[in-house]
Length: 311
Image 1: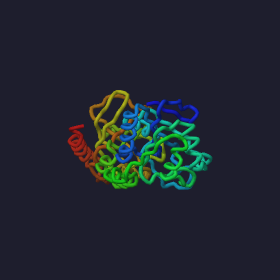
Image 2: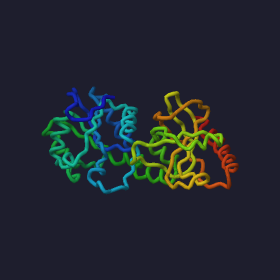
Image 3: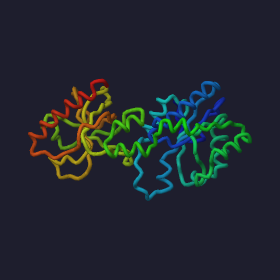
Image 4: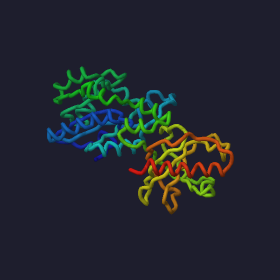
């Protein structure tokens, strides 16, 4: 997949089949639209094009709103769109100036002059332009004027999937990884840098990698212990992860992410790793001493190995 970070970089394609949206999560609902986009581009011997925006529009339009949590970093979104089979991705810098574009200016400057749209595919109830004034009806009216066709994915096709980013966020907040993964169509990921901790895990027989997330808006699921897989420079490993405040050994109230890799020998410090979450094992809890904690960690490891046996 070719990625462009400004309209000026985008090449002139012979037959651009386009969709546009934020696509946070690139979940199964999004994938319904992407599948249709690619079907049309193949049938019409064109090129599939996705237009997305960074940062998330809410961060620009509502800068004091601290409630927004992202399902994907930009890098994760790019990776998911590539895996979906998209050929060309345009990431438009979302600014207040861009947000002020009228729906007509968006059609003319982005869809027509920017990516030379021949076919536009949108989900039902899609809105665009300043104050979301643009709609399918606007597009249908303007498309013949500017020489492109529009197809709206029927509500029933997307409603059959019955998925929204809000539902996924709710599942993650409750620690329901299974439901979140079913809605996403893949294992919910983290990507972050391994930093130094207090090395207590090694003393307990469970060395852990402390992970710091570069994207502060990335949604962190509910505190607890999870079965995970970890992708490192050395390969892919199974393991378990704790999200929380480590009440047995620490008075620190800051949430931390620690992952223990099974069958791994080596140094991960300063390395960027990806963690894929597969199942929740238990709540985070406080134990009466280190011996009780170690016994529970051994049980957690057995549980994680059982949950990951087919992964």
